[in-house]
Length: 243
Image (cartoon, helix red, strand yellow):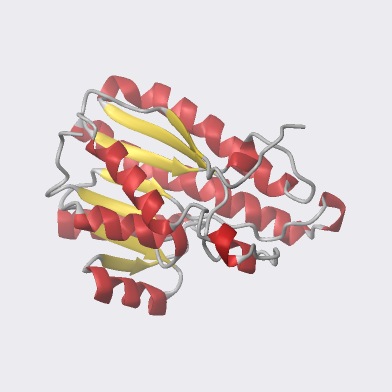
């Protein structure tokens, strides 16, 4: 990797914890002017104090919040070079018949609609700049099948296809779009979705926040004429057997 990120302006969603925390911290270390976005102001403050990133409290499922975020970044940083649509969550990992309508709508909104809303706004800016990188953090669930994961998987599969379509639309403007498809992560995802936690030895071999941060930073450091449209990241400790 030969390109440097000094002076690049980056926006990371879902940045208050987990993978988003690691992504924001690593991009900052690489020289980016990083804006972290999430709903928890307390956690964002902790991130800002420990890494020096700037932050905005917002709900990325709400279009008006996206407008406020983008307007603030342009007013204070003048441009936007990197968007990492990392926000997401399991919401309710349970069979479809046990899902509430609210849970279904929340999962689709959080894991798919939020990324589309953000990409629409970032793509307009980057199209005019004739440069930029948009990265969508998807999930291996989009490509595999496990009981209880149907709604989350459907949202992430939609994100994969949206990312491919956006890549085709933005390529003529020298804007890069990448879909990152990770699997088992050592984050708070399991606890938040009421999924049993693995034992510490297994957890230590899962994808941690800094692993994700390093991969995304490396993608962004590629020379501007190169792009990785899609990449899958798996921990060797996890066995995946397609149905």
